[in-house]
Amino acid sequence: MTAIAPLTTRVAWKALAAHYSQVRHLHLRTLFAEDATRGERMAVEAVGIYFDYSKHRITDETLTLLLQLAEESGLQARIDALFRGDKINITEKRAVLHVALRAPKGHSIIVDGEDVVPHVHAVLAKMANFSNRVRSGEWKGHTGKPIRNVINIGIGGSDLGPVMAYEALRHYSQRDLVFRFVSNIDGTDFAEATRDLDAEETLFIVSSKTFTTLETMTNARTARDWTLTTLKHPAAVAKHFVAVSTNTEEVTKFGIDTANMFEFWDWVGGRYSMDSAIGLSTMIAIGPEQFHAMLDGFHQMDEHFRTTPFERNLPVLMGLLTLWYNNFFDAQTMAVLPYEQYLKRFPAYLQQLTMESNGKHVTLDGTEVAYQTGPIYWGEPGTNGQHSFYQLIHQGTKLIPCDLIVFAQPLNPLGRHHDVLLANVFAQAEALAFGKTSQEVQAEGTPAWLAPHRIFEGNRPSSTLLLERLTPKTLGALIALYEHSVFVQGAIWHIDSFDQWGVELGKVLAERIIPELESKAESPLTHDSSTNSLIRHYRKYKERST
Ligand code: G6Q
Image (tube, rainbow, N blue to C red; front, side, top):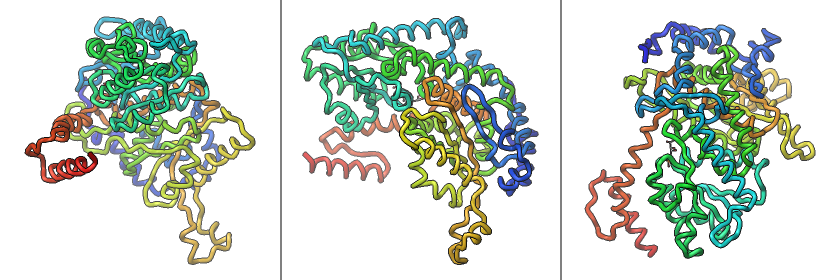
C-alpha cells in the first residue's frame, strides 16, 4: 500500500473546507435562478439510471474540488486494486471480489494464482440446474411430493440480500412457489414462517458462509427437527435441505449431502454476496435467465465504474456527494426513499451494506480517524414516509440528504396510480429544494402568527434516481451503484470497508451468557451490576412462566 497524506491534510480537503464556508448559505433557489440549464447539466445517465444531482448544495467548483479529492485520495488506484483482486480487505487479508461474481464467461480474474471466473460459472450452472428442478416440480420431497415452499435460513449478509431481492423481483417470481426467510434467533421468526406449511412440500436453504453462525445453525437444527417430526426418516434431510456455504466440513456434519451444497468463496463478503450462491432463493424464485439478467445489470455498472471518467461516473459522484454532506455539513444521516413498493426492503439491505462497510473508526494503518466516517442510512418506501417522517426532513433542524428512487413504468398499472406516485416524488424533490418563502406564505393570506409555521426553508438536498422499469437488470445496476458508492467513500476515508469487527464482541459475550440463562442452578454472576441484575430478573420472570 503506497503511503498517502492523511485526509485532512490533502490540498483538496483544505480547499473544500474553505469553499464550504463560502457556499454553505447558498440557496438552491439562487443556484437554479442563476443557471437555467442546471437541471440538465447536473445529471448523468448510465446503465439505465438517470441520476439527477442538480438539487444538491453544490456549485461547479464544489464538484471540481470533490473530484480533485478523489484524485488525491488515489481512488483510481484503489478501483484498479479492487478489480485486480488485490487483498484490499487488509484486516482479514482477503481479496474483495464481488465483481467476479458477475463477470461474464471468458473474463479472467486471478486470485492466488487461479482464475476464479470459471468457478463462479460452474456454481451458477449448478444453481440453475437445481432451480429448474425445483421450479418444474421435478425435485421431489421425501414422500414424492413436489416442493411448494422454499425457506431461506440465514442472517445478515446471508439474509438481507435474498429477502430484499425476492421482494424486489416478486413480480418476476414463480407464483405457485412460496418463499419465506428466517433469520432471527427469536423463535417467533421460525414458528410464524412454518406454521401453515406442510413439511412434505418444504425445502430449506441453509445459507451461511461459515456454517457456524449461532442464529442460523440454531434455526437450521430447529428446521431439521420440524421436518423430521413429520417425515420421521433421517434420509428426508437430503431431500429437504440444501446448503450455501464455504465450509464443506460443517455442511457434511450437519447431514447435508455435499452434492446439494452450493459453494462460494472467502473473497465474497457477506453483505456483498446476494449475487453469489447466497442468491439461490432468488434464482429459484425468478429463474436462471432472469438471475443472469440481474448479474448483467451488476456487471454493466461495474464496467461503468471501472472505466468512466470520474465526472460522469455515477458511483463516484454519489459517493462524493455523500461525503460532502457527511464531512462538511456534518449531516449525520442519509435517507433512502424508494417510490416503489417492491423495494420495501431496500433501505434495510442498504443499511447493512453502507453501515457495516463504513462504520469504522480507524484508518487502514490503524490510526484513529480525524473526521466523520459512514453516515447512518435509513428509509421507507414513499409515499408512506411522506405521511410520517418527512415533516422532520422538510421543517426540522437537521440536514438529511435524500435519495429518491423511482421507476417510470409501473409493474402493476392501475388507473392513475402511477402518475400520482410520480407526481409525488417530483413534488417532494421540488419542495425539499425550493421550500416556500415567507412572501409566498403571506400571499396566500396566512395570518402573521401562523406564517412561521408554514414557511419551508427549502435547501434540502436530494438526488433523484429515475429508471425506466424495475427489472432484474436494473435492480442489479442499482445495487452495484450503491456498492461502489460505498467503496468510493471508504477509499477516501482510507478505511477498511470490508471487515466487520464491530459485530464480534456482542457475539462472544452472548456465548458467555447463554449457559448462565439456561442453567437452573443459581450460578454466581460476574458481570457488571446492570447485566447481573437483568439476568436475575430474567431468571425470575422465566420461572413464573413455567
Ligand atoms: C456481512 C457480515 C455478516 C454475515 C452474517 C452471516 O458482511 O459478515 O452480516 O453475513 O454474520 O454470516 P454467515 O454467512 O457466516 O452465517
